[in-house]
Image (cartoon, rainbow, N blue to C red):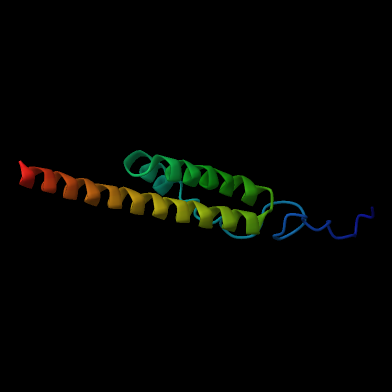
Length: 103
C-alpha cells in the first residue's frame, strides 16, 4: 500500500475511507423512542430504541447510509407505537362509555 493511495471504499456504503463523515449525524430519535416505549406500545417502542441506538455507532464508523436507515426506522417505529397507543386509548374510552351506559 502506498502512502499516496486513496483509502479503501467502505463495504457498508456511505462515504468510504477512514474517519467520520462530514456534517452532523442524523437525528437518532432516541427521546421519542423512549417516550413511546413508556407511554404507548412497548414492543414497537423497544424496536424503535434498538434502531435509535444504532445511529451514532454507524455514523462514527462511516456507515452514513446505515445511520440514515436506522434513524428512519427508529422514527417509523416510534410513530407506529404512538399510533397503536392512541388507538388503544380511544378503544378503552369507548368500552368504558358503553359499559357505563349499560349499567
